[in-house]
Amino acid sequence: MITMTESVSTRDDSELSWARGDAAPPLLTETIGATLARVTERHGDRMALIDAPTGARWTYAEFRRDVLALAAGLCRLGVTAGDRVGLWSPNRAEWVLTQYATAEIGAILVNLNPAYRQHEIEYALTQSGASVVVAAERYKDSDYAGMLAAARPAAPDLREVVLFESSQWAELTAPPTADELAAVADRAAGLTSDDPINIQYTSGTTGFPKGATLSHRNIGNNGYLVGELLDYSADDRICIPVPFYHCFGMVMGNLAATSHGATMVIPSPTFDPEAALRAVADHKCTSLYGVPTMFIAELALLDSGAEFDLSTLRTGIMAGSPCPEHVMRQVVDRMHMGQVSICYGMTETSPVSTQTRMDDPLELRVGTVGRVGPHLEIKVIDPLTGETLRRGETGEFCTRGYSVMSGYWNQPDKSAEVLIPEPTDPQGSPWMRTGDLAVMDPNGYVRITGRIKDMVIRGGENIYPREIEEFLYTHPDILDAQVIGVPDEKYGEELMAWIQLRDGASELSADDVREFATGKIARHKIPRFVHVVKEFPMTVTGKVRKVQMREESIEILGTLR
Image (cartoon, rainbow, N blue to C red; front, side, top):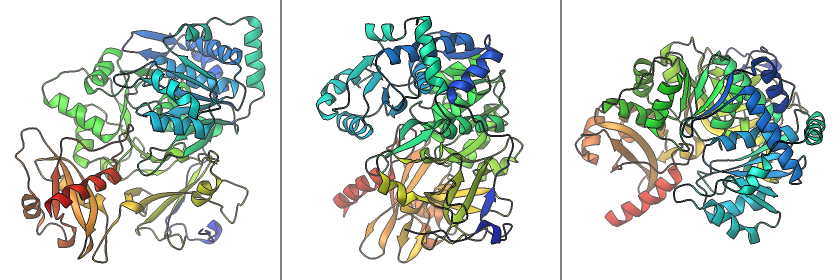
């Protein structure tokens, strides 16, 4: 394990890749339930939640009423503080109600990826020790009820499964008695903001996912501060097509909204570009979220001639993976999102660590992931020595502060690999080693250049795929590109580009790409192999599965060689 030995107080902060965020606004010290109660008292008649597919809607007063009813129902079911409650469903109103109901009584919500299959759900239920699961019966080809029934022998702690479509769910959400509401209030009064409230499994682009354990303080403040930087108020309506099971949806979306009295708008159970833009138009949304691939799909829909009134949009968040510059510029110009923000983070940090500000020049919002967020510290280190690098040097991005998880659920060894104590503040928040490569400029803006594990070493040269991907975006026929390393006897690794073409574009060969790149980037950075695909293998949160791409590429090249 690397020990980070530098003391912040002895460094020249203007030269080193270290920065501390603003101390304002103050951090919230209350629980998520207390925040909802406070906001409801002020904005009870304002709209809290709109479920566009069903037409259902809740004011804040109605939303909190139903949250408390579900909280009482969970108590009747025997759920106590600290019990793990699994939630398995695509985006729908019941997901949001369950999120806030579990927080109200101190149960730990376990977010279950709606794309999971049998082996994965058994792992998550067993690893978390979930005693209760609430779930959709099915969605498309996912038979959640059937998989949960089959999982019971492998999950000995699981004692109750409640399906949204069942009579048991209706009983669980029935109006509570006065005594039941009093019991919920007593339970809520005994909670603290440091209590664990959520287990979110990492996206699992490599190996089995790990359960990041997060508190009210972690995610409640992260959602609140993201909303502050977007200048949210009760007048905002946030279209949230990103999955609730991930931090992007439930924290940056839901918790950012409810901490400001804004409206959560669910456009569809899973991402659909037409549904997202239709929801913006129908409900006059002011903010729209997405990963770059979602915005690319929405822009393609506009290119096809579809028309939507997007004039109410002013802001939104693009996150999850780096955004091509041309995409960001179109989002600003064509979708009216002049104040769109780029956020960077990870599940283990609640998630946001850096964010562009609304008044940042466009070149900073397309070329960086912004500056450190309030109440956080960030730095860029040499991944081998732990030494803080000078600004302008590439190294591993680290962060500490209120947002950092307590650890991976029941995995202390894995936690110790990424949570490194600060010697000058051993009792304070540890540094989270992200595994991401970053560079900080003289003004504190951060650019993510790739993953340490994605770096390609070709003939002794360290090559960062993100740089090559950005170059490939400049080709007029290339819609998106991902670059990976594949084994090579001579150089150790060679570069292979996976490419998505624009509609109507001619087929591109490796020779075509090499001809385009020659003289524009260094020779050793030009991909030797090119694979044209209609889509990349993705996680449900929109992250490209480069490990799977590498495995498939090895098979493809093996048949060609």
